[in-house]
Image (cartoon, rainbow, N blue to C red; front, side, top):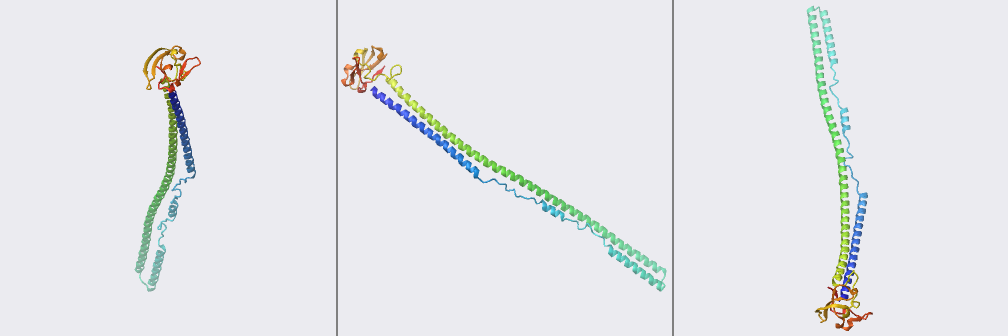
Length: 325
């Protein structure tokens, strides 16, 4: 029976060791797979970074229209700035009046007219010249008015063009700022997305590695637990003697009645063999109280003779367990 116990314990230990080794192997393979996956993702990300399209500035080709404004300003003029007075017509009219007056005087002298007629003609000529002078003054006043209106209109257009120029410059500056903001934002989004993917891959690889390490630790713990459990079973069954060494197998264990003292029957086995409690006279066989059979009461095939002349019992052939109690 003790042999069966030892064999079972050996199988249990072997199973624990083999199971632990298999578990550790699987854990190492899982850790290696996690590292390989991490390396694969890193290579793919590096290739993606190297070949992805460039971020562009959609406002980079915007041009200013202020040059057109300058050209329009250069073409502006006051159409009334250089108006002249129609003095030529007035001078002709005055000359005609003088000629008419001279002719009239000649006629009066030839006809012997009185001086009163000449005076009337002189007054008429004077009045005509006044009218010509008044006409010239009217033209000058009208020209000054038109010139003022033209200047006012020119200034209004200048102001309008200046506002257009300022608006255009503001539009260009705003477009440039928006373009820079777009480029920065797009690049920032790409960088953050890439970093997120990288971190996600690293986190997953770390998780897989941690799981693999945990599986390895669990396999090792299971192996140790299995060995401990098997050894504990052997210890509780008495398969180990004092001092931690394996107890002598039944043929080596002295079961000769002559080696024992304080022999007391405590029961029977299923096959009807008597079971006794006893102590060894020679403490080298073991100290304390044990339970077992007497060699003279069991089948002869389970008994062997030792070199010292005392019987040894092979408990593996019996349905009785030899143990310390």
